[in-house]
Length: 281
Ligand SMILES: NC(=O)c1ccc[n+]([C@@H]2O[C@H](COP(=O)([O-])OP(=O)(O)OC[C@H]3O[C@@H](n4cnc5c(N)ncnc54)[C@H](OP(=O)(O)O)[C@@H]3O)[C@@H](O)[C@H]2O)c1
Image 1: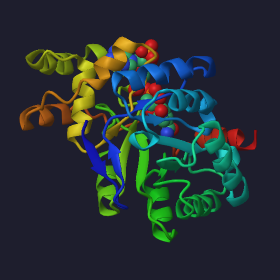
Image 2: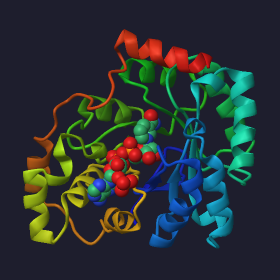
Image 3: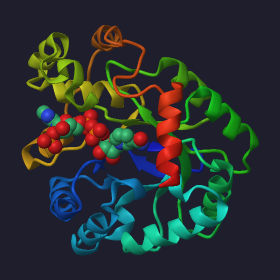
Image 4: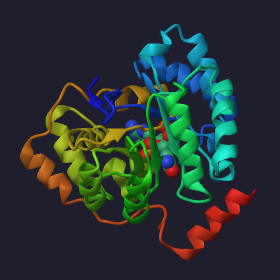
């Protein structure tokens, strides 16, 4: 495993396992499988409705809690100081733990300054070892980073070979904030798993397109959290540390960047309407 050190000194694995869209009833099995494969970092969220399954797997896995790195995120409907504060305690209860390793604001909607203050309080109380944000595009990220007491340690954004977030990367570097990739395999969009360049580069190392896509991000300094419900794919996505892409290959892969989201435009009014609606539910 390779690690990054966050701006507060906390060590975070460069590779973790994401549980978005894993049904609640399958989560315990999936997370148990992932831990048995070797994953030590798990990314969940209040909005995934599967924190309990993560908690059960973590409690029963036999790996000491301090060897695991748990991330959860405050959902929009829990935005604002009081609700966010209560929701953090609820997440800890569901995750069967006294602290999370990383606590994020999931989306920059609702009263996220109030949520951030609740996260700062949780951080100071030892309920979160690190705090940060997710889906904060440059305008909102620069704003929040400029006015909070404890600078965000992480920003989790859509990052994969087709959306490399080159501008965001520079901004985050300036703020010493770690970039963490959601959908690091683009959920297979754009035929990522059979992409010609990824496949051709992988052949030399006997690696798949998925492994090259993930290795590219790790070598670019981006934390990745691929999701799979299949143990063989969990293993495939975990076996990234026995090869090294050359500078030439990294340059070739940089050219795959399309510079736009494959999923969602956070600046679109209809997207903002959708998130505001979700926050009121
Ligand atoms: N902060 C946010 O707003 C946000 C948004 C999205 C995601 N996330 C986080 O990021 C994590 C990963 O993103 P994601 O789940 O959206 O997408 P992803 O990891 O890019 O892709 C997952 C998809 O690819 C398939 N897959 C995985 N490995 C594969 C392989 N080696 N070969 C072929 N197919 C493979 C999976 O299918 P199977 O499961 O059938 O194997 C699944 O359909 C999430 O689980 C979540 O923790 C955060």
